[in-house]
Length: 124
Figure 1 (cartoon, rainbow, N blue to C red):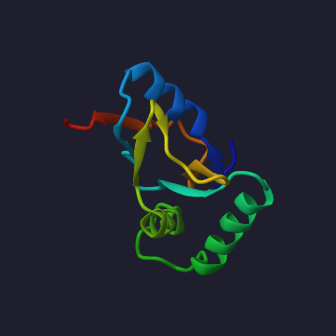
Figure 2: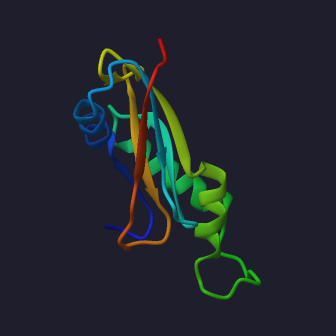
């Protein structure tokens, strides 16, 4: 994996929902990292991922930050993107728009990362 990239994790999240047996409810996805995040975005054109990474790099330049570990921009990008997404589950599947995908956003890679999911059924 690269220093900064978006990885499509839609199919893994869909598999987790299917394995859960939940037909209708919520799927909360969370990354317990301060230099990574989650986002929903277009999944048809792969150039969108690169464009987003480049735009974030321009918005958060590598300046002389007081945090001296060399990954300060990654912390700021993670804050802008966010560490969680909550998605609807309908008929045993994630309810996404036609062109939407769920992306793990890596801003300080390559590193070993975890993505946590909590799938909660609707109450009758």
